[in-house]
Image: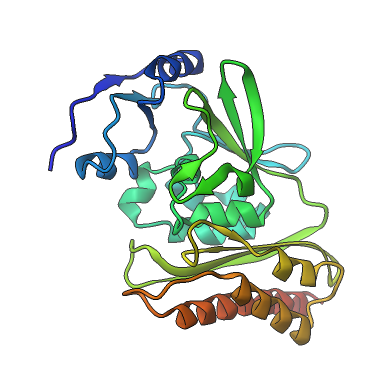
Length: 291
């Protein structure tokens, strides 16, 4: 199937992008990697009157760590850049573990982390990872910039809280207050398939005590689930087997899966419980080897 007719613009500045989005009156879409938008247009699930290609914008293809320890990912930073990033592998294990699991190599070559967050797919990986890390996006519109926590940014399946004339220019992970640890695990039937279930865990530690914990789930609800009760159990405590089991159980309770061709609801809850337990157990094993 061919997409509906649309107007195409490729501006060179963010200001031009915002003006085009404003003039589009809600009937315009931003194109970065195109790995979500183009398939939707080909199937006519999306039929924008205007496509605004931002790939000519200079200076948005970065990912960096600032002096305060915060991680910044620009709107045109590709999944593949993060997959190969020495910076992430040394600074942020949860992101580093998720990056190679995004879709397939073709998608990772063109798709972007920011685009994935904006697409707000309930089975998207990055939203769970950035939520677990307490991250936020920076949106720019005619009135300037504003920050939006990712767990507030997604308003529902394939929906976000951006105004029609705003664009996300970067995603930010706040600086850690302790030693970082964590990971991301998911089950997919084959490479590139949507996740049957996935769990992101992000920890900040002082010795063996958890200073901050974030746990978020993908594929087991109408949108990314922030498993706050599960994370709260870990805060201020050491990762004993009892604490790990309690957190894993609460993560499974937070899941809201539905039975489908990928598995039963109970099976998906079991996956969430198992993934959270595995990640936390792996953290404790790493601590013991380092001691």
